[in-house]
Length: 327
Image (cartoon, rainbow, N blue to C red; front, side):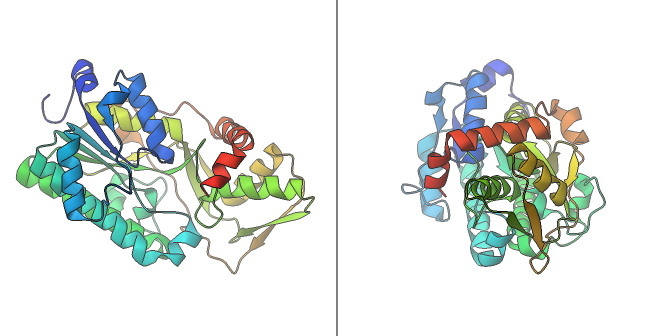
């Protein structure tokens, strides 16, 4: 290894600590690691009831016991607009504490590579589309996501500061809104795609003529299929090591109103979609420029929005009891 870059053989021999490894993104990243030749025995996934990552002592114990060369920090406390409004303090504290303790413990233990995941909600509320990484620092996030976003901004700074002072090989990836199989379908915390899928399917089953959605439908969003995100994360872990945030996006921007109609059509719901403009819209527009990731480690997407939506809807219908049991 040199400067946080691994050959394929060296990467396959590494031991990995994957926080959030049982979660939505984490399970797909683990599968991608296995596709890259990493055995399941080389992947350490901590249990929340055994290691409280908001506790410095527990986090240090985890990193020491894991003996990992690469840490993939995927754990986070986040959700849609409703969850952000309800738990701003928790979202700030838990995301900040987990990141601070893990980065420091990784440094102390001599971890060779640290990969952390931020989120597009950390970008300023009003950012020129498409979002370039240089825009990351040019303003305050949307109010509903500011506690999460500011915490993640600070952790990007921390990783870069540790690189400068200690030679710490930490990278910060910013995927846009993810969706796909195993997503969260809890209407209190879910992001827009799983929330809409659940609402539409339940409305159709209950013979309802309408569903109600937050805002006025005008904001735009970019969505990234979770398998594409997982591949990008693993590729970056192997072959990228530079400071600053790095975008992972699909390059496709759509309005929330058009998205809702598309999901309704794919689920054969022909009822009315009512928009509750008394509820917040969130960030007006969001679409990332992923040129840096494409040039630095060959990032690209393989799954378009319609294909990804069909796969997510099919998974939800087939695994509905599983999805709702964890909601």
